[in-house]
Length: 94
Image (cartoon, rainbow, N blue to C red; front, side, top):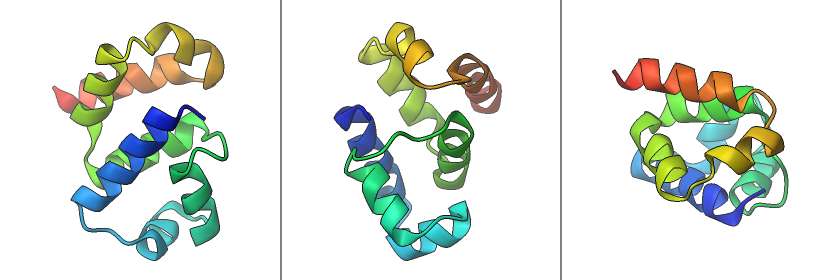
């Protein structure tokens, strides 16, 4: 996974003062899976990214990141369903 995205996801979680153990429960994952995602060691599914963003209320952060990092074009091929994700995030942020 893109390390910048992994860093952003960790930042979203920390800004909401959610521990990895808590995030794991909220996401239905193990704490180790959360750690691997935040360290960029594993790909995250679009549905899990969407749930992460909803859980941390990080819609604006993700949209800003994707626009400023110019990831939209590369993300479309690297994360299945990202077009739907961006559309849903835009609707939530509105």
